[in-house]
Image 1 (spheres, rainbow, N blue to C red):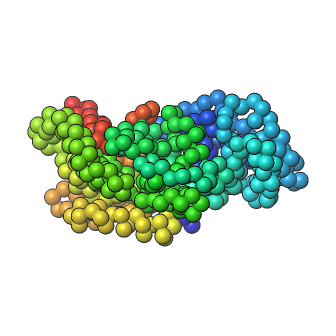
Image 2 (cartoon, one colour):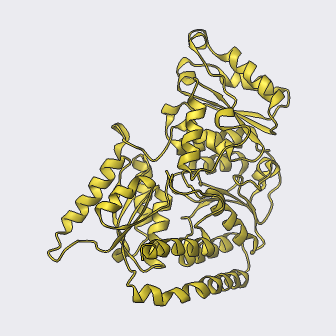
Image 3 (spheres, rainbow, N blue to C red):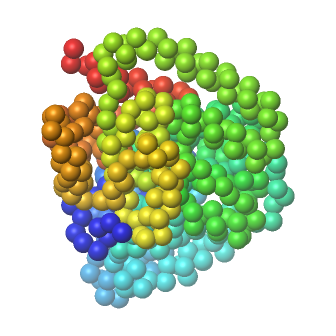
Length: 448
């Protein structure tokens, strides 16, 4: 297990409250109500917005997030009365259709009965859910799971008939995957070409009615071996929706496998799946083939160092090895993973051919990430010069010093990203893979 029990300098995540808050803020027409001390909501939103490629705020989040702002009085005598007041006021003045109450450390420590307060509003037919998300309960990913479990239990309708060809996509944690909106939209585009109806939930174009009726899905697709697993399990327990866990598909090789797997599970005609793969490959390679001369003449093959969360780390490693023909030297998984989660991630990397398996490092501390990668490089002891040269680092903005130490190219693709503005960009699918390849090659030619 990585640095769970020690101090983590410049971690690549927020606390559980931050994860729940950003998830609610990513649901169109939903608003969060934070039951916590002053500053918790604003700090979490700022970290998400800036580290998530400046994805921005709306009228209901950022510094405008409804919050009880508990002070000494509430801490001593309890904050339930203050919470009831805040929920009532928020329902009156905030233009939203779903409200999620999430809690901070102090609230969970003093033991406010949030369930009892929220239940009064639920009994009146108000669309209010709650989750106890004190920061000490985990990371951004844990907060995502906690609020999603609350939605599955308290908001999603029960007893609806199954709808063939409808899927829910889970496991993409907003801002932890900086490109979650573009990635979800690309998956929807591809699957809809197979006449599959897709609930993505977390884009500006999703409707709350889809979330409300998501129990009708024939399948939940979980795009992470760790994030969203508890959510999928709860979906199955309460609503009978089965799930499959698949790695994120970046580029043609991974997307081809993804589409075939989903097609088989949903009983899509294989000819339709193969036709889509052929069309998308034709689109991808019609651009890539024109870059082959540049790639070969300039000898753009590189050793790759990947620094990212588990799901993205695997997907990026597979992309650079299979589709860019690079050599993956080291992959650093920055999740604060427990032993079970770490083993799942290790098992996923074992799917790679032996010759393409990188040195797998689990580390969340930014300083130790650099130290461990450089230790691996030094251990190569190459008498002819740099052990991994030329190299390229795909990681967070925090990894630019590591790239400099390796005299390597660098591009930011994992949280936090503060040197790019991210809107609809995404790396999933054929088009996302082409975008990533184009960005990487643009870095390599940028100083010419």
